[in-house]
Amino acid sequence: MEEYNQDELSEAETTNILQEEVVKAEHMMEKMSGEGFEKLMKENELDAMVTLGADAATILAIEGYPALSVPAGYDNNGLPYGLCFGRLEGSEPKLIEIACSLEQAMRIVDLLFRFLLNCTIYIVSKAMVGA
Image (cartoon, rainbow, N blue to C red; front, side, top):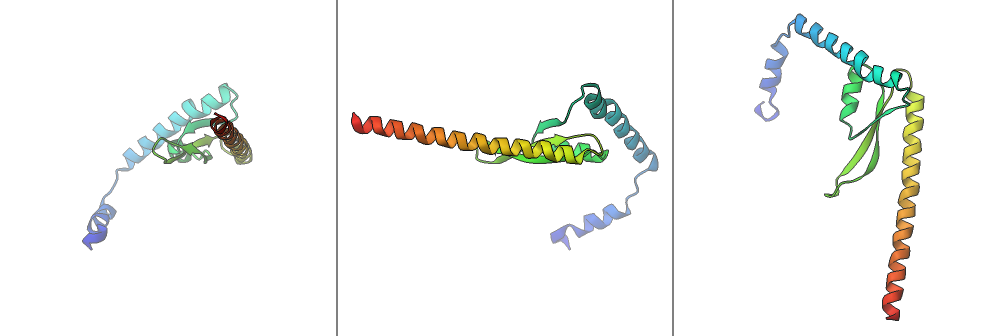
């Protein structure tokens, strides 16, 4: 079953990871979490951490912190990007509230931008007709 790389998957199943390596990795993640994200949030009394893109969600999920991503716009190539919000464990309702607030604010900004753009086009076209 070369088409689906089944041979490699079967080989990976037989591979053993040393228990010591797993324990070291777990301890390192706990230390980074306690001395990093959690410390940052508590010492600075932050409501949420915000990053560009969704990459932080994976890191937060490892230690059980909630994270979600909200669409934020498009880059120069027309590809969508988002903002990732993260909070401390057990604070999902507040996280959803923060993300919803941003999403609603972005809709208002988008509507205002479109309105101003249409006004500008109208004014420019009127000026050209009158010229």
